[in-house]
Length: 294
Image 1 (cartoon, one colour):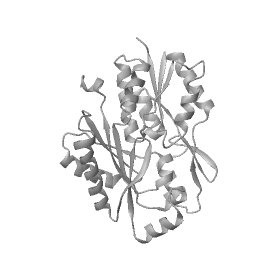
Image 2 (cartoon, rainbow, N blue to C red):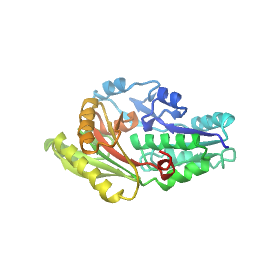
Image 3 (cartoon, one colour):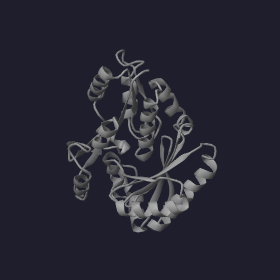
Image 4 (cartoon, rainbow, N blue to C red):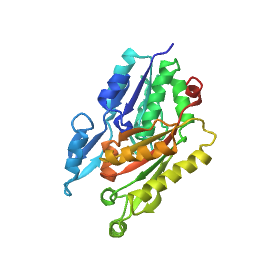
């Protein structure tokens, strides 16, 4: 039986400590504040990050791990394991996935390292990583795990309320004029991530409206889009908004009592673009290969 190592990045929400406990390697995503590089969960905590973000003069940008870093991690992994399944964040949101796919074609890695673009991020990416680990523990090969996650890549959905337009404007995702109008009108956009696309979904003015909008969206997805997808997981993500996330889970538990809803803070490289106060609800599937044994 092939021994398969599972690798992901910190955009999955899996911390360094959790990764060690679960036997999953977590590559820290780098980002810059005022041209100084930090590594999530290694050289900067969530608390330090949001403190820095409060400074309007702070220049915050995201990056990706260097090719040398990725290749070194793979080389070390292959000394102990036969194969590697590497699950980075969605290719539609970062170029780190495309870089890893290119590196996996090198002679020393080809046929032994499988880079999965299953187009997920945060808690949906976390679900894929945990599923990959369980599949590996159950004896599935790297290629089989790659095929399963690739097959199911569109079986997920994310709806996220952004509390402030400031960071979308700073990141160039909104024009200054649109951001100014939205701020005056106190608009809180609800965005959606379907596959590799981040799009506007709705415009609301209150947190209550945002939650109602997101609940309607996942209810519709469960009844229609994912009606034949088998077991679906509901999860919550947030940026510096733990209290509201807990309240939202209570509301969702009343509507969907059979679901064990997990809460995670969004990774810092995502938070750079949306700022604090965001709240998201997600859906992701359970592969039929695991549903059969649960």
